[in-house]
Image (cartoon, rainbow, N blue to C red; front, side, top):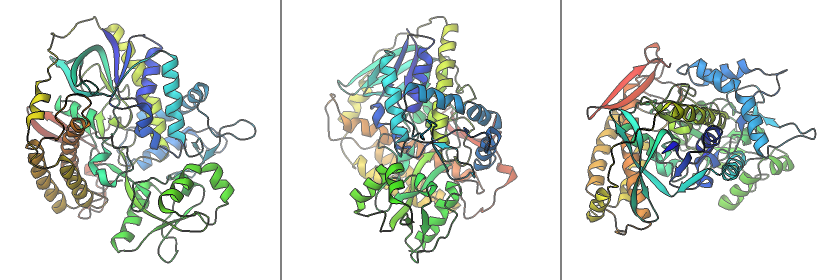
Length: 531
């Protein structure tokens, strides 16, 4: 029996694996895709850490994070992240992450929104990609085993105790039951609830969240969706906050600046959206920045802007729009990353560990996934040593539900259902929300959910059926859409990324996290203290 199974091979999952491998050889990573396809790759701008202690402090970092969360996070959890930041950066540096460095060999840092301190370490504008490559290389060096293109179907739980996972092998269409003493879920966020309006990878479909929920594991803060202010208009291509960190302006059609570019992301995104709702285009202006600096620090983004829109950043304004970038909600965990079911841990964007609250501070995502990924790996490996091997009752590798799915007729295209869901979610549960729109959205989801359950897929093969994978993913994002809308409807205030036109102010009554849990077949919502 394995000691630790990790589902997901992004930054959190790979960090957890390396940490667990220090304590046990019985570690396995299972992933529906490959590490270089993970959402971590999209984190271009950098990773926060206080290195200049003469002009900055860990206390400042803690306070900036707490203030950005709009006071519904836990300072002890934030303190764990911020106090471990230097160790995290040193660990990544030692593993071989090619951070940008000055002539003395010191890691360079840049400004990011929501702080007045230069605190964000970076590797040009490829920070997440460089971290993933380095972590993956080190996992291979450490002989950590991978099962790529294997999809989590369900958890094996007996008497409220974790036993193993049910996995669908995409290559041969078989179901496998794999048993372990502990589990780490690191499957990423649920940005594809807004699939037509997100910078996220197409595989970021909230699978771990949805499966955890169906097994009674508590979720939290699903209403908090971070819209990044700057995606290229007409595409979902991210233009990192590093552009504004280097001095880029946000300007209206008259080339007038209208917002503090380095304010928190929720404030900047709403200011842009207000312009767009008035049919006024908004632009990123980098014309005044030395082109050699841009080529050094933002080569990827300059190339993307040229390739996609044929725009020369040294001469032209860049049309932008907000797009969903990060989901603050997730599986509720404590500071050790353990979920509401013992021996199941979660880390990365799939987890809600009371760090980001209502609005994530730019530069904290990579720090959080690496720091708590390492914590999750250590905790799960240590816990496995305390567990006497106690196999679950042997369960058949049941593929019947897959075969039944393949017999269904195509009544409505699942891709049409997915596109409709995204369009309506962006319209009714986007940057600006009202009670009427949210109620309308729940009614739409009920219709789409029924159409989905009555629909099949064209490809009837068992071997390498991506059509089947997408069917399962769409089922997950429909569920998470419903839970997101319920959470947004219940929070009758505006806080961070959740903005209610009908409740424009924050309320002490809602200075709490929200929770969702499936209890006896019913969706139960509650508000709780962030502990």
